[in-house]
Image 1 (cartoon, one colour):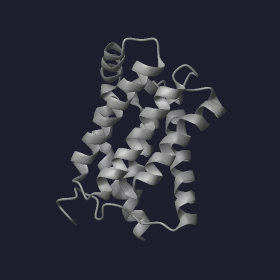
Image 2 (cartoon, helix red, strand yellow; image 1 turned 180 degrees about the vertical axis):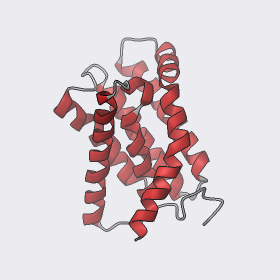
Image 3 (cartoon, rainbow, N blue to C red; image 1 turned 120 degrees about the vertical axis):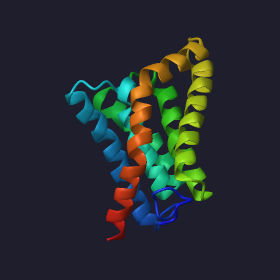
Image 4 (cartoon, helix red, strand yellow; image 1 turned 30 degrees about the horizontal axis):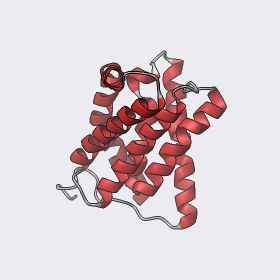
Length: 176
């Protein structure tokens, strides 16, 4: 195992075109299923951030293209099938989730350390959220960002604790 890369053995798994589309579809489905599952137990989306989870994993394992595509499709398909996120939040959430997938994949493709990649992807995603709120919403973007981080802190901590383990487990399964 490469200790510099964290617990993932390789930075990015390369895919053929057909496998690429299949992986995007699977991770989009996982990114839809986890929020649905959480809502069954009243685990609020803004607090636990379940939509972000598999988008970040997709980027970490398969690179920026899969992370970006999964991040783009997930909120749109979720809105089309469940009405969530609310239409007023859909553009900002879509941009934020796309940023998570993109930066997680982009930084891992640069062979950056897994933990640093994850932290930077979360920070850059929040920066994108700030600018999208600033330009697309009639809110104070500083207050909006502060509120999003404060409310989502449990989800952020869960992501930091579990994402590397889940990504490593999925990578191990894929190697078989």
